[in-house]
Amino acid sequence: MKISKRLFALGLTAAAILSATGAQAQAALDNIMKSKTIKIAVPTDYPPYGFVGPDMAPQGLDVETAKLIASKLGVKVELVPVTSANRIPYLQTRKADLVISTLGKNAEREKVIDFSSAYAPFFQAVYAAKNMSIKTFADMGGKSVAVTRGAMEDQELAKVAPTTLDYKRFEDNNATIAAFVAGQTQTIATSAAVAGDMMKRNPQLGVEYKLLLKDSPCFVGIAKGEDALKAKVNEIIAAARKDGTIDKMATQWLGRPAGDLPL
Image 1 (tube, one colour):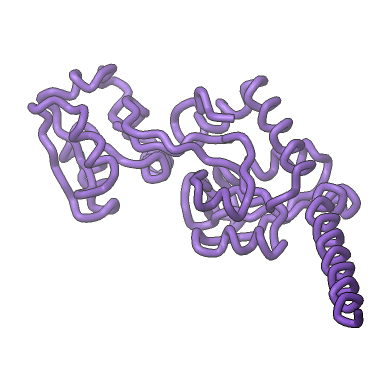
Image 2: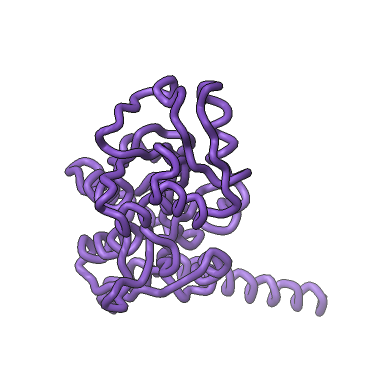
């Protein structure tokens, strides 16, 4: 009898703890609106998505997205710098309300956090000068391309490029960029992040996006169970897609519109 009463009491305690945890888990949006501040984790070492500008202030596509969400919520934004390694733990430990840091969605991550609709593309592509006509991969025949050896863009390009494409492979992104900027190749195959930074640093080259190799969209990370906050973020993203804001930001920072993104 005593054991049964004890187990019953323990059961009530556990239920109370779970109930409190559930209530806390659903409190993020309310807390944000009450405090008039939202903490958003962003990268500061990964241009053009997030980096520190000459004025030492964070800037980039992810930073602009964070500011957009805060603005639409009518609250101040507190930018929390994170790395790839700690961005999800920051969300789980409530050091950030949202993570906007080139976060891709996969089954493993979906076990521990929730995701919004996609807000930006993350892709590997072929780039070249605006005056060079490249509309299909066949148009690359006989041209030269700078690419980082073994990188995803190297692998993807090999699947679709004509056999007459002249590969100039380099051991790292810096060497690949340097070769293209110096005019050693006519085209370059690289990620949107690397290309975006290169284009900003070398506007005189007149480089533009030409062909898509692989697309892996970015999503906003949200703590598990924060359904109200997730719904609000999705509402903001949907409106920004509809009015063209998402496409404008992608064009500004990545050199191409966001296009169709998964919900």
